[in-house]
Length: 250
Image (cartoon, rainbow, N blue to C red):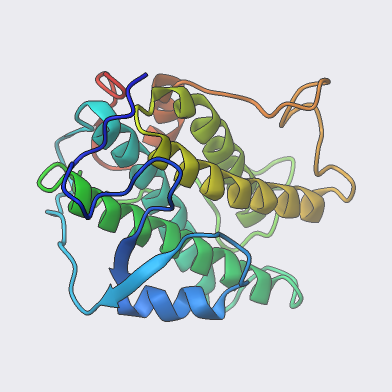
């Protein structure tokens, strides 16, 4: 595994140092208002502008190669999660319990920060390689239901949140070995720990005490790992574009 970082100018992050990245001004204040210890990302500052990827609702989305491809892979999943929680937060008649609504607003904040952080990191370190904005497809989720009933064909909000969080944790765990730079591996570790907290919280809402069942991990206390191919096969259900992850990590 190489420790070579891109780019190699003096401003580049070095192994063992946190990734210094610029994020949107709006997200900086969202971050500041969120739980202070949610992530330990160190911010060099915030800018008013950011490079915006091309948006398309059709076509094939390829993730590229090397560390850029792994970051794009994480960015795709964070886009998906952020879009889901933003839709939940925007509901005017939420089926969630009153006490759950503010916590889901925090989850929406975290995921938006993860999405914006990754977008900024890709644009800074691998300019021109970022994937397009994805178009979410949530027609398999019933946003009027807190939890799916036995006869329902669609997921409730908590069911979908559990699916997204479990998928995210397994994805980060499975992609860790694909990073060539220790810097990005460290950042991924900081994000996946937050995703695991989300997963535990949502699980306990569905079934108290189920935060660490064998479904999420194994009997030895390890969370699941999934390959990008397996993760994207699930994520494809919720995205309009066709996701092609065949070159991730190569």
